Image 1 (cartoon, one colour):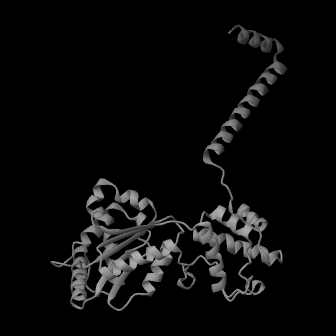
Image 2 (cartoon, rainbow, N blue to C red):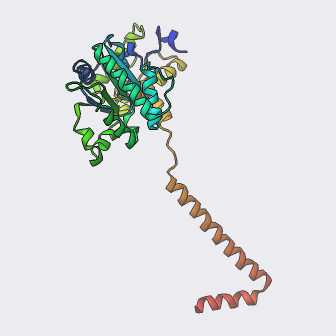
Image 3 (cartoon, rainbow, N blue to C red):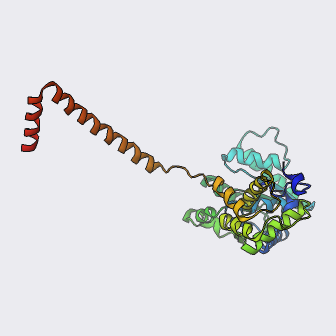
Amino acid sequence: MYKKFFGFKEKPFEIAPDPAFVYLSEVHQEALAHLQYAIQEGKGFSVITGEAGTGKTTLVRKLLGNMDGNVQTCYIFNPVMNRVDFLNYICHDLGIDSDGIKSLGQSLTALHNYLLQCFTNDEKVFLIIDEAQSLESDLLHEIRLLTNLETAKYKLLHVILLGQPELNVTLSEPQFRPLKQRIAIRYHLRPLTLKESKEYIIYRLKRAGSKNLRIFDDGAIREIFRYSQGIPRLINIVCDNALLTGFSREQARIGGNIIQSVIRDLEVKETPPWSLKVKIILYVVVILILLVCAAFGLLYFISPDLFHETLRMRNYG
């Protein structure tokens, strides 16, 4: 809608992880280097963590796009499944013939044979699991057991786990100590700084074909950083809405006032459950008071003597 107004060839702040729009900040370059090292050296277990929206999935897409023919990968983007489905998915994604496979044991056998064949062909096989903080305990144990598939000197299956910081909490539990001890590479992806956030916005404007890289003034960028805290996904959301607002107001320069307006629209606060309960209790109390007053009023209307007698009894009590 606003592409022609701002002179874009593409929308610069789409949320979808497009490798063409990847901005590699210092930490993103380091994280990618860790992943590439894990691939090159065939590390058994690697873990990359970061808050939601910091760019983990985008990095994986960038990594997969740079793979050579000697690396086979299975990429799982939604690990919420049982053991049978999990192994079936791995076999299917690796192109293993699944005809006749009906049990967990048969899936393991087929996978093992495939891994041995890849080893014979001097090929590495990597299992990459995104959103790994959602893995159930039994699947984490299954993944650890899969890395036991090995020769006398080399691992046949290598694993990269990507997840939010909760993954570190899970891996620190005593039951996962054997898995934690196998982690060879670990890296935490922090959010962008204010300087990096500005560079990120300019980079995406440039990639979108914009001739004007100062669409967002410094005040706007500060407001974007304040709200997003340097998380790229939130930067994209705010910037996309700000461009739409600028288009609707016919303002080709986005200032802090537009960003503040966008943020107010995005920050729709829900009524906390406790406050709703308090309101209900107050309504009930008010209704009970009104009912008591109505009862006394009716009593007075019907029998004034009984009403006064009731008041005397209440005062005496």
